[in-house]
Length: 77
View 1 (cartoon, one colour):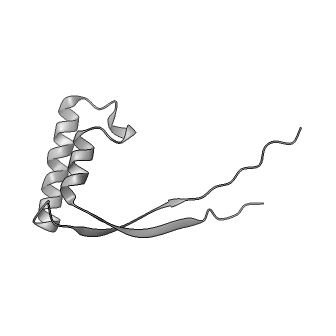
View 2 (cartoon, rainbow, N blue to C red; view 1 turned 45 degrees about the vertical axis):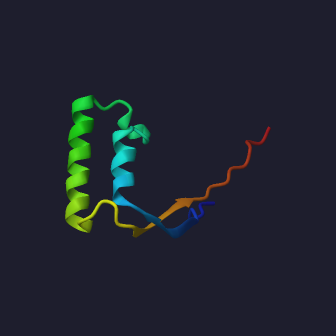
């Protein structure tokens, strides 16, 4: 029987600069194998997009975020 995966959504306040810093610091596993040059290009692109969207990287903005909940049963013996 298939069930929909429930999601929990909520808002949180962040500064766009925090997202740029997280990317530059390789906080997400998707960045771990990126070359330094590719990472620098991604950081520059993100910074540019966030400046265009928000104007000030230190301005607090509300973003919607969340997570999914999944439960598993152990296999039957």
